[in-house]
Length: 96
Image 1 (cartoon, rainbow, N blue to C red):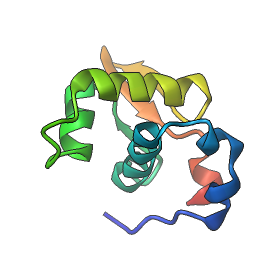
Image 2 (cartoon, helix red, strand yellow):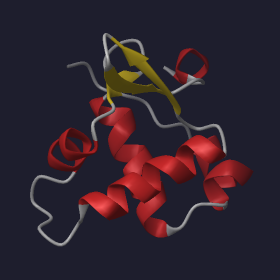
Image 3 (tube, rainbow, N blue to C red):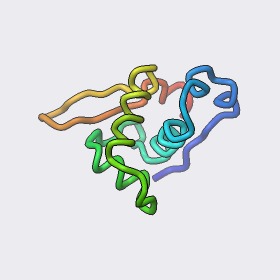
Image 4 (cartoon, helix red, strand yellow):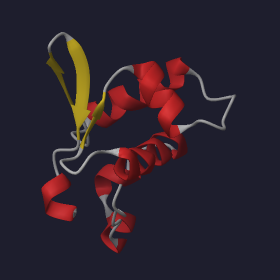
């Protein structure tokens, strides 16, 4: 998987500023795990285990809540394909 870029402008983003610490970390970890088109498996257990493999204290409920928050402010969009949930980062092409 190629390296990902996080621009310094993220530090003054109002969207990012509206997140709590966990939601922000979730978003950054999504950035470095998405495919080349900004997409990722939307199943909560997969997100939890791929983004937080060493964090036993991170729960599926916390991950689901974080994804919902990211989606509510437009940082993530959810969709289904063949009955399976997926997510994508709508500003991916602007930043990667």
